[in-house]
Image 1 (cartoon, rainbow, N blue to C red):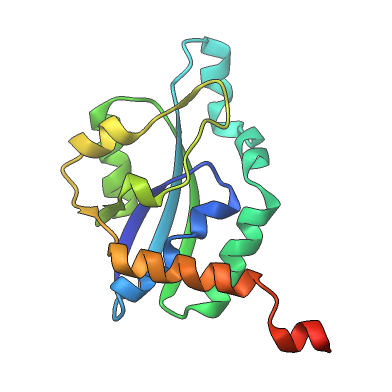
Image 2 (cartoon, rainbow, N blue to C red):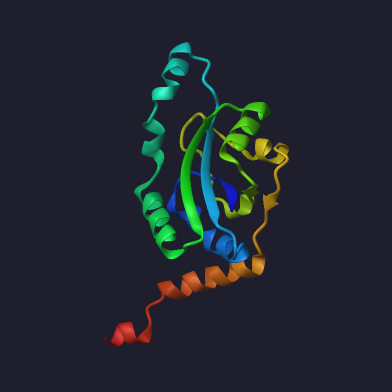
Length: 163
C-alpha cells in the first residue's frame, strides 16, 4: 500500500491526474492525502481556536467531494481519500505531519491543482522539496492519452445526436 500526498485547492480538477496515477501504480493499493497548508497565525486567540476550526472545510467544493466518491467507486485500488489542512511552515512540523500520515511519496506539482483558497494559504512546494520524500512523476504519454479520452467523452457521439 502506498500513501501519496497531493497538494490541492480542493477543486474537482484535483482528481484529473488520478486515473494516470492509478494506471502507473497498477498493482498498489493507494491512500490519497489531499493537503492544503496555511501559515500559522500570530494571534493568541486564533491559535487557541485552531483545534475547533471547521471553516476550512467550507473551501472544499461539492464537486471535489463528488469526484472523490466517483473515483472510489470506479477504482478499487483507491483505499482511502483524506482531506487535510496543515497550519505552519516549519520543516520539522511538516516532517512530523508526513510521518504521522505515513506518506510514501508526493505527487509532482505539474499533476496537482493548487491555488490559494484563503489569504493565509501558503505554497507547500518549498517544504515538499526539502522533505526528502520521493516525488512521483506521472508518465507523460499516459497523461496525454487520458486527456484525449476525456476530450473524446465530451464530444457527442453520432448515435447520441441521431437518437
